[in-house]
Image (cartoon, rainbow, N blue to C red; front, top):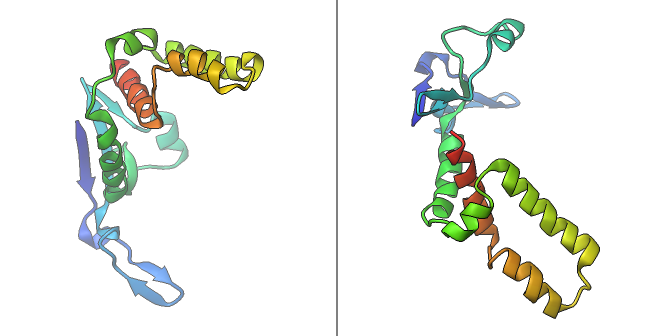
Length: 148
C-alpha cells in the first residue's frame, strides 16, 4: 500500500543555516514515495511533467521526506479506526453525494436557518446525525478510498 525508496546517503544534502551545515534525522528520510491501491499508483508524475521538469524516468513518484507523509498518516489513523454508520454512508457514499450534502447544509445555514438553537438542533444537527469534525474527516476518507 505505501511504498518508498530512500535516497542514497551520499545524495542527501545537509541543511544549512547561513554557514552552519547540519544533517538532521528528518533529512535522512529524503525519499521517493507512493501509494498503491489495487494496482493504481499515485501520486505519480506523467510523461509531460517528466519532460518539462527534466526528471529521471526511474523516479516517477513524489520526491520528498518520507517522515512527512508518515507523520500525516499517523495523524489520520485516529480518524479511520471507526466505521461510519451505514445510514450516513449511503447518503454520502461518493464524492458527488458528499459535495451535494455539504452544499445543502451550507445553503440551509445561509438561507433558511432562523439562527435559533431550537431550529438548528431540529434540522441541522439531525441532518448531520451528530457528525463531528472527526466524523467528517472519517467519512471523507472512506468516500475517497471507496472510489479506488
